[in-house]
Amino acid sequence: MASTTLASTVRTAFTEDGAVVMEIKKGLMYSSNPVAGRMLELLKAGKTHAEVSSTVAAECGVEVDVVDLDLKEFIMTLEEYGIAETSSNL
Image 1 (cartoon, rainbow, N blue to C red):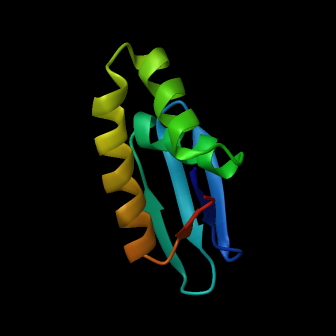
Image 2 (cartoon, one colour):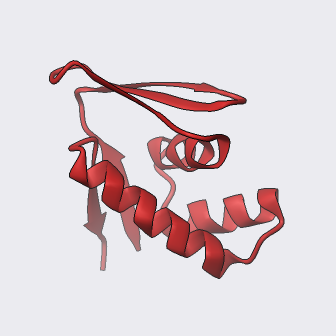
């Protein structure tokens, strides 16, 4: 199962409006919408990708496959920005 961890230089704040992510080493700040904020919150809590997708799908009333695609795209963006790293535990 794949899991994603946030870089040690990342700080987060979560609200009903989404998340704010601060990369303190680079001095950069990013914001997200509420759904991406929830995904980030679950990833930060150590949930696997499958757990994040099923939780968000249930909370939002959408198919897990739809959330899987959105989560993969979101994680790719986090990795591009140097905010997160993904590992696969086979």
